[in-house]
Structure formats: structure tokens, C-alpha cells
Image (cartoon, rainbow, N blue to C red):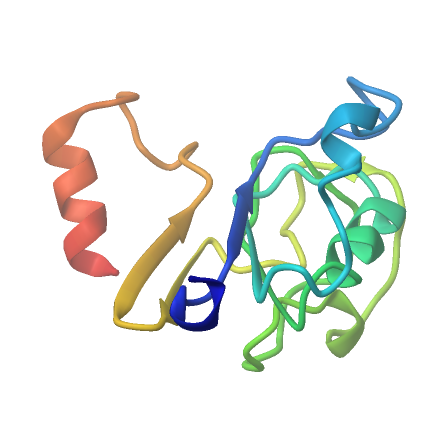
Length: 139
């Protein structure tokens, strides 16, 4: 069964670690085995460079978009497949509302699926279907 199952993808966001929680709950963390999944998709608000590094260690393909409250990472300049602040210029480690090291949106292909990745703070008013449709078409 697992031989032709496809690729395992972890989708998460709004971690806010360490600002709102000190760490990922142990029950969940036990499932986060390095290289068990092929992709990590994160919708932003990671919280710290340490948390970013933990996500990068989980899978060979890590894709992250900017949240509305991101750690103070360098401004995003990379066009690489992975969202990697180390490929950009600058440095920092505290929360900020300044430009993030990550793109506002990103489209990833996993197998036959095209996945649009976006934090959602750009959708105003929130959950408005016409605004969601416009964003989907842009991606």
C-alpha cells in the first residue's frame, strides 16, 4: 500500500512560537519525524529562526509564505524552490511587521496537484468569496 501512496505533505501555520506557545505540543511533535514527509507547507507566523530551522529539518522541500506577524528575518530575495531566509540579505530575530523573508504567496506542485499557499491576512474582508476567487486566479 505505501509503495505507491504518493508524497506525504505537512501543512501548518500560525505557530507563533515562542510568542503565544512555548513549543509544539509533545503529542504532535512525536509525529514530526525528519524525512517522513516530502514537503512542509507553512502559511507563516513561525515565530523564531529556531522554529524555522526545525521545520527545515523535517523534509527536503519546505515552502513558507509570510504571515502577518513574522520573526524579523531578512527581506526575501530568493527565487529558489525552498523559502530560505539564509539565501536573502540582512538578519534579525524578533517579531516584526516589516517585510518578511518569505513571499506573500507561493504555488507549489506536489505530484499532480498545484497548491496555492497563502497566510490569509491579505483577504479583506475575511472569508469573502469574491476576494478569495480573485486571489486564486492571481496564483
